[in-house]
Length: 111
Length: 111
Figure 1 (cartoon, each protein chain N blue to C red):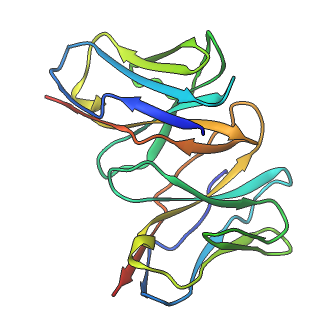
Figure 2: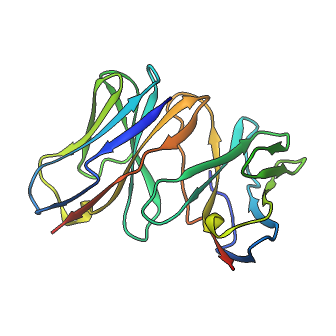
């Protein structure tokens, strides 16, 4: 069975601190992977997408970066968090014909 | 303009059949209509999608107008679990396809 896992589930971080969020896909080789962000009460925005290892395209940066170090792994990071980075981060993947399926998400609070 | 138009909200009662409308008057011939739903603090859940023909699955029936300028998501016999924000999205399938979420339509289900 194909599964998508995100870590951590939730995090509280200080402004200016670094951040690393992870997403892992199991059961599907070479999936397209996506990062989304949703501010509290806001709409979901696509940040990055990747179709293969080592290749990441930026849609909306928000002072964040993404990397795909392995076929089944997608990382979202920044060296300095801003208050505006608070929100809900979602990883998504496409196992079949571009239909995107979302992970459980990571809640981030920046203080 | 890749936007769609949905009502802000709709109300229903358990057991009813709900019709959620969506207008996409400028849709291109190669754009699919996708429906997702989202409840707070969870990632969007894929509901269904279609191009030209009506489609049906275990969750819903998607009726697409013959001119493709509108569609209706039909939820039979709704339960409290169907309460969510429903998103109607246009998307051109292909590498790195971008899902653009708007505010969606909030469906309230009363006992």
